[in-house]
Length: 208
Image (cartoon, rainbow, N blue to C red; front, side, top):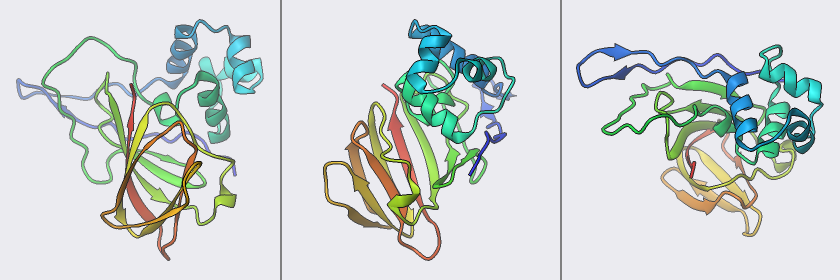
C-alpha cells in the first residue's frame, strides 16, 4: 500500500495581545535537509544509512517528490529519529508562556496502513513532547514491518476500545479505556486493536 504525505490543517494560536497568527506549515524538504546537515551527513551517507537511493533523497530534499510512508520510515531510521519527529519544526528562539489549542479533529492528519495519526499542538516549536491521537487500524502483528522503535520515552493512554500492546521485552498486554502505559521507546513496540471498531489512543512521545 503506497501512502503519501497528507496536507494537514494549521492550528490557530492566540498571542498575548489578542491577535491570532497562522504559523507557516512545515517545509518537509527543508526539514529533512536540516536534519541531515545537523548530523554532518552528505547525501550519499544519509541515503546509505536510510537504505534509499541518493537520487531519491535528493528529490525529497528538493521537493521534487512526495515520499511514501515506507520511505519516511527508512529516512527516520537513517536519521535516528521517529517518523513523527520529521514533522516537528526545528527549534527556534526560546519562548516562554506558550500555549497551543487543537480543536477536536483539527490536528494535522497522517494516515498509514496501521494507524491514522492526528498531530496535536502542532503550532508550537521547540517542544519537548510530541502528542498525537491515533486510530488503531491494525488487527494483527503481521500488518507491521517489524518493530517500531525510536529515541526517547513514550506514554500511551487508551481513549476508546480495546488494544493489545506488544513490546520487545514483555508479554503482550490487553488495555481498555482509561488504561495507560509508559515505556522506553527504544524498545520495540506495536499496538493492535481488539475491538470491532478501530480503537483510539493518545500517544505522547518525548523529543529530548
